[in-house]
Amino acid sequence: MFGWFERRLNPYPKADSGQPPEQFLAFCWHYSKDAAPWLLLMSVLTALISVGEVFLFAFLGDIVNWLSASSREDFLAEEGMRLFWMAALVLVGLPVIVWIQSMLTHQTLLGNYPMIARWQMHRHLLGQSLSFFSDEFAGRRAGRCALYDDGPGRRQLHQHRHRQAVLACRP
Image 1 (cartoon, rainbow, N blue to C red):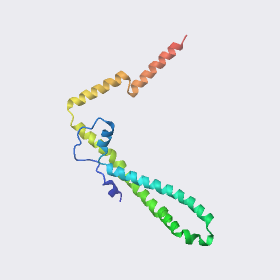
Image 2 (spheres, rainbow, N blue to C red; image 1 turned 180 degrees about the vertical axis):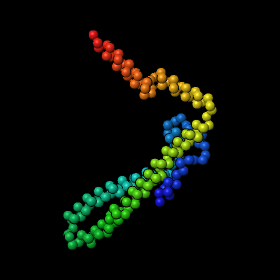
Image 3 (tube, rainbow, N blue to C red; image 1 turned 30 degrees about the horizontal axis):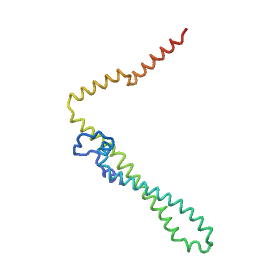
Image 4 (tube, rainbow, N blue to C red; image 1 turned 120 degrees about the vertical axis):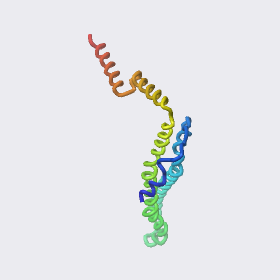
């Protein structure tokens, strides 16, 4: 049962997706287009759950109005079908929709959707030249040392500033 949901979205796309776009929305779409139908279905199911819950609260208000307006003897005869359909919605409809939405979110999307982006980024990096990696790693390391961007560098900078503040306060 879980496997069916897990197999709906392939986390390792076979086709090379090429260079990711530089614009934000195009970049997001580049990594989301394989999951778009499932994201849309998840959104629709979430909206249905919300509408069902709002309808449930409105129905509870209607029950109070019906009870005050009708007699005890005629209440079930007048409102029985509405009560039956609301019971069906509460006992069958909403739980089924919540279950499908939960399975779609947790089994189809949460495991496979991030993996699609990782795999496409990994495949893009595999196509880079050796000079790309040596230039990129050297530049990143030099920037960290110069800007104190890593943990030990920040700690050393903080300790140095603390020592200066303590020495400045001494008479």
